[in-house]
Length: 402
Image (tube, rainbow, N blue to C red; front, side, top):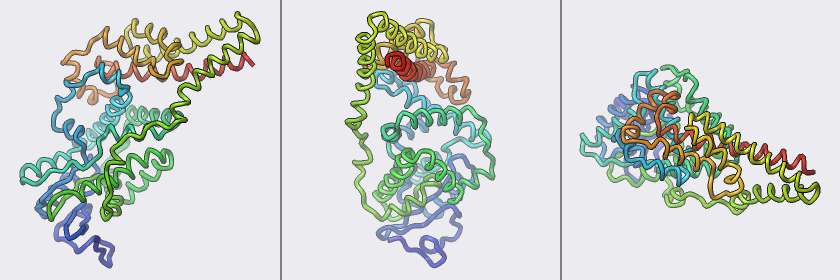
């Protein structure tokens, strides 16, 4: 069990141990949690000092396999299958990862440190000291999918807006702010505000991962383990590490509920029913006008989305033609059609994939310059336009039919 001294510290003090490192006792083992800010030079020093003092058998880092490869293999982008990303509906996921990477890079540039340098230092020290390296975090795609599934439409739109504005806005981050984040109270305030705005997001991104990280650290081999995690995860990990919990439930993406599956078909069915009712009530001319409204509103807004992404003229046309049809068919999205057309017109090259790192460096303008990221924008913006068109067009048709 964890030993708590009268002064509230976890276990006896260790000479020279950084203030942001907490020492825990788990089943006779020593576990050292290094709380970092991810974009702080001091955090790198904390990692190095802790490892040198502890000489651990295992070093755990807050990375999954995909993020580990992204850190250690900058050329991993060249293996991206853009067509597969679109077909599997992962364009928004990949675009979100780019946005978050860009946001952290801009903060890192302001502070003169590469985002994730604390994790890279842990990886380097594990190899240098022949310690067992443990990738302790949950797969990032599982986390984002579980998060997305928990959100309603309004929350999804609000979160997308937050991601875009956070990435585009100039981050007001200085050394004092980073020091606040490294302290538990400062990070707690940030997470508390985040939880109030997005309680479901906080649950999957923070709370579930506290449990996951704690269990992976618990399973790490060796008598002395150093775990490098974001400062905000330290209290949760310290609380959860005593509990032996299965990881399988946290590694699966929940199947959409019956209501979620039904609503996808209910909306288009309702639109068709309203058009049919208009035909019965006011005749064929009324129905033709309703159909025209549906086609124009859906098509124009999806086309505007594709145009905002600077899609090819054929891409814009495909979005206009596809949206009125795909909005009535939940198995396909307008953005998938326009994205595939954009990929066909401007097929990404290996050089384009290799240059994806420059997209982050030149964010947000870089998103429109690179053919690969532009395809992602086409998919997301076309889908957003089509979704907006469904609500506006459907409401308009309903208002004139009753």
